[in-house]
Length: 473
Image 1: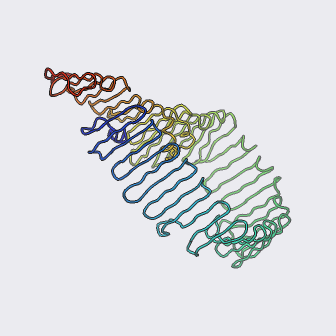
Image 2: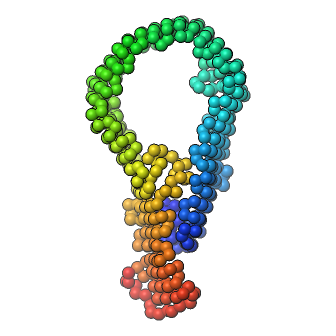
Image 3: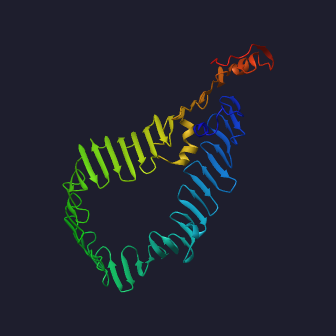
């Protein structure tokens, strides 16, 4: 368990190799754990091997992890640049604007690269595509459309989805709609209409003021929408009914399937919901208590204090927050497996996590509360400001680090090891074996199975005497 707590750095392993000179270097290795790590200049430089995986870091500039099977992950000044590779695919991004993805389509991967919103290149089932916005090109499977073609946008553009095709000239002013049993046109913002026989009918006049729509005509849940925005908006179907006056401030919604009614008067400050599984009252900023099926949320003096709960047959979850991310306390339990986790953040002072029986406390916590579970921040940025860390489990095993191992302490069952650089080092293997070292070896003392030993002035030889007591602590 201690290898989990200490990321396999335990100084208590029987074959452990440990060499430290804070803050220049910290080297730890264990052949039995197939592990070695080297940290230089505190958290800034790192080299670590764990079985088949190797990690390098030059924080905050660079991080890379790779294994013997060819999988790797690289971050450069995250979120500026990132690269990820495995057996089936490879991808990289430049500030999430320039992206490249390559892989086997059978695995769900895509071959695509882009410098958003200007350059697009890729391959889909329809074939290869390329586009240079706004001059021209074709896109497949982008923005919810099967195909997009354009020339000197907004001069001309065409979008296709299933059998529906929309030709735009001087987008968004003029458009023609065509397809199987489907036709329409628009002269935006004056007038537009479209219809598909037995499926829908749509019209607008003086957009966005007047709308008339008949939807889902091929189902049992026909929807009729009428709008004279913002004065009156309505939507009526067999399942739901919606009416709004001076949208979005005053409205009433009735959901006949889920069995509830909601009134907003005015939105978003006052809302009343009545129903068996959906009910609640909101009077912001003073108070809110609303239940939505298995979820419940409460506000007190919004945005000061919020409670969110979810209870199902599979999971129980509760989160309390103060001022959104200033303070957050999350508790979650999976009822089938009994697994539980907890996460507490107080920005920017500390963060605490407990998962699978292992707890982790760190001080400080600058970005983690804003981007929880972001592994790139955990690897590249968080070690720079975590001046104190502690990990422990339910069996009493623990590992502590202060100021990137200026002081560190490890405990595994009855074994203990700790160091306060450069003053003192201490290690206890058992009740009958212990070592104490002052000033990195100026004076060292050992009590072991071979008796007691005292070394002075960094010399390899010293004074021996006596035999250890088997019951001595």
